[in-house]
Amino acid sequence: MFLQNVGIAARQVLILYLIVAVGFLADKCKVFTEPTARRCTDLVFYIVTPAKILESFFNLAYSPETAKRLFIALGCGFVLHAVAALISAVAFRYKCPAERACIFKYASTYGNCGYMGLPLTEAVAGEEGVIYCSAVIITFQVFTFTHGVYLMNMGKPEAAKFDPKKLVLNPGVLAVAVGLPIYLLSPALPQVVTAPVSYIAALNTPLAMLIFGTFIANTDFKSIFREPRMLEVGLIKLFLLPAIMLAGMRLCGLTGTLLTAIIVTASAPSANNTVMFAAKFDRDAGLASQVVAIVSILSILTMPLMIAAAQSVG
Image (cartoon, rainbow, N blue to C red; front, side, top):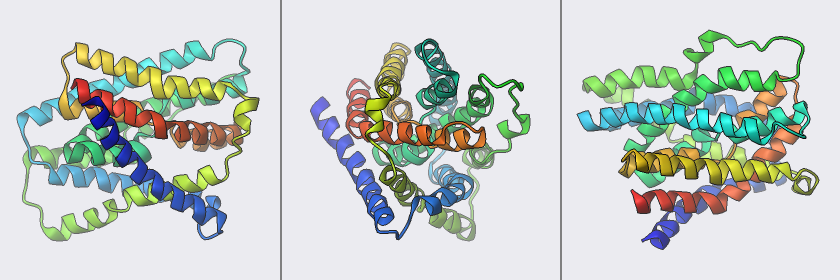
């Protein structure tokens, strides 16, 4: 059963990475390059991903059990990020310069639960899984605009700043705030409302993967030999964190689609936000790009194993 699940998960990951390969080739052929892709990340972040979250709420029939599991997923998301923050704080506390440690800690804590986790969750767990993944995205937003900002300000003389409004006024949280009442009340929405949302949501997987392919096309993979801590980031993000979450959730009796969706998000590679935050806070964006790309390449091998483990025990 485990090997069968590995095969299923690997096939879904392969499908996504074939789209990544198209993005890689598009960059090399100068058809769709990284600078253009970076500008497109706002399109994905502010419009496409929220549309995907809304569509999931539109399509999923209400049931008390699913609603209950949605709030459990929210709690799992908080636990996931709290555990990740604690592990990364310990792992990169010593013998690591502050200007590099902040990159490694951020990359170890925050996963690509939107661009990578959401499409893969949909592939292996369906619309119900997307709902649970959306709950984790909320906790991602809460942590990244508090703990994430703190990390990127480490070692700076000024105090860490964050805008409390960003905890609420961000695309992921707003999409859930709109979609959750619709899911709970189950009104009959006209096609003139649902169809545009579905069309935009359909861009989520291909556009996110194409963008990611351009990032990989511009990565210096020799850097992994100059900075072995990148492998440490991969070990934490791709193995240790999902293994802890899998063990903890099974001890709590969580199974099925909820377990699979949480493990997909827990095993996702480092978030693209690592690069965007590094640039915003005047950190080493080049190092951030290398870490994200290398951990993402490693995830091709690790995500099928973690997903298969979740499906086999759940």
